[in-house]
Image 1 (cartoon, each protein chain N blue to C red):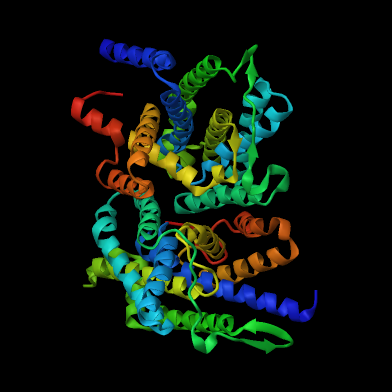
Image 2: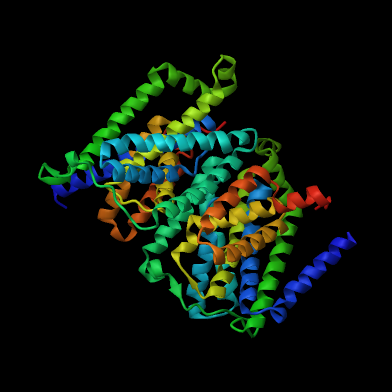
Length: 307
Length: 289
């Protein structure tokens, strides 16, 4: 236990001090990893804990990004950068969830995938959202007197949001609510029979995951300064799914590990070859076939670390 | 709008609907038998189009492509089922869906590697290269061919599934695979056969689509969503549902473009949402076991 705490402290210190140790590009990669990590964790809440495999999580990433882009151009504050994106993404999740949760399993997969592509179609054809070019020149927010345009405040902000996400999601899965979700994952009919309003629990989980994904989408838009309809594309959902699978479903922390593995592999591979999608597909297939527990599962099996 | 325009748009919608039927019926058959939603089904459509292009490049014969491409894609499907799907039948069905999702990336990049990323198109066969005038509307004769071909295929598939011994075996397998095995049927072989057949239908629709919609590597992922919407609207695992869903979505898409050009891409989702609201498991679907 002390060993784990020590290792955790070393990782946190390393990540926090990283901008002092490395150049601009590695720091940008780190921010990408952390932001995608937030997104992947929110998906893992659905996949790993509630047993709802959503293939349309890009919807909330994109909603968060677009809302942030529109709002930050008006007034770059905390509300525009974080509160509104989370709220609107949660609202989107409420609507999509209302339709999708009526069914489960493969129907749920198909509906979530289709609804996310609906947002792609909507933004692609909306002139006021910049149509296929999207919105560019998005300023970063200004929170508590700190301008996130500067490198250090942005770094601190990303760290704070990652930490807050981990704490909040950890509290959620350990709460009575989280245990009901796990029960639904194990045996939905039994939970229904015991008297739990299963649909309402699933919808709430979907809304929480949507809100967190919206914050991640907003942060990413602030990182790169633009958003296009491609944010909604099936590939965005697919990448998050793969991160969760690489890390290990139902582990939360694994999602960040998966994001790190994914983004480092991507930046490494794309300097040598154009066949990134091929490698992505093969990784997907090999992990599902041979390592369904992901990296965390493999580590637990080998080293005997318990979660 | 003038009546001839309306008529020719309706025919456009019908030919697109028939195309969606050929595609989605493979998806729904595979689901009915294997309980797998094959997200790589759009990739079979893309592979079919490219196999067709390759055949035409070699032989110059469209009809040969219409035969060879589905065969090639069927073989790919059979190999895929045997090599990677079969080991997963004992696991959570969602694992298989995730696996087929990985194949979307794999197939798309393989095709880009072999044929490059640029847009190509399959020339229509000489016999249907022109156009005809019906009720004052000028219609490309290839579209009429697609409509007739698709409807003939729909009848043939219905007869195959409902009226033949093979169809009875497939229906029995869908209903209760274990019991069917107990009757002395080689169920794993039937699974492979159905998956290969479904893949071949996907490949066939790719060749059929070639002269209407051009071929490019992202076409596989692009057609997947309309195909999924068709089975959501019609109901998974139902042949009738697949036909009804295809025709509805075909018309919705086409008339969306005519009447709501600014929001045409959203039309099919509106239809889907309405159907899900009223009948969560589609027009002809049943709640899953």
